[in-house]
Amino acid sequence: MSIQNLTRQVLPKLSKLSAQNREAVNNMPEMVLAKMIRDGNSKIINVGMNECKAVRILPDRIHTIYTDGLASCNSVGVVMKGKDGNPITILSHYTPLPVSKDLQASTLDKQLATYDYFIDKSKKPKLFFNVPGYQDEGELKPCVNNIFEKIRKVMDKYFNKNYDEQIILYQGKNRPPFFSSANIFQFDTKNPNNLKMTTVGEKEHFIDLLQ
Image (tube, rainbow, N blue to C red; front, top):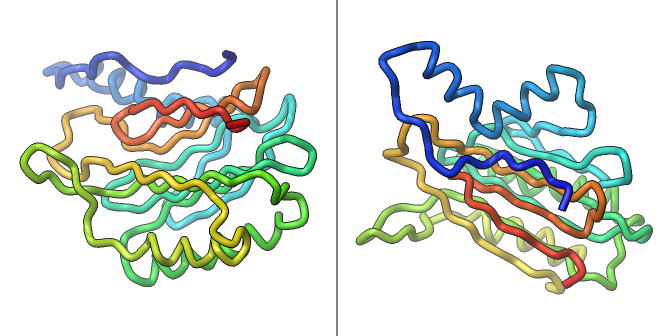
């Protein structure tokens, strides 16, 4: 699999030395990707706060799309197959404010309308929610959040409930130093049907888009 490994096995400790702390920050996955963009890598796309971007994953072109850090924000990703067999990916990152949730749904609607012609509707899209949860007896549980119904309404408009959905909760409070809070989609440059999704806390999810 030709996907860059960005995740760390162990988080670094907070140091009394500022240089070590800077190095730890620079080694966070989202910071590594941001530096690659600054250095001229045009195959990586960043999604800032209150943004929604869509990309076609094509050979020798874009292979990674990721959000800035999530802190109580909602990230919604949709991965679809194009008629040419290559993935089409939409990724968004919006604050939890009511107006932001409306914008997140409306921008997803606009992106789906733009790419609707290119989408292979015979293949089930994959919908991913990366949203904050709260701790209850040591277990993360979903916060009250109407982003689900707003996004599902948009998806139903284009796919008539024919899509797979996954909700991935993240820890929003009491996070340790140097905790990565980005949502990252990396596609295998040799086989774009292989997707590695790294969610908040560097939790890795490997997805075969042919299944």
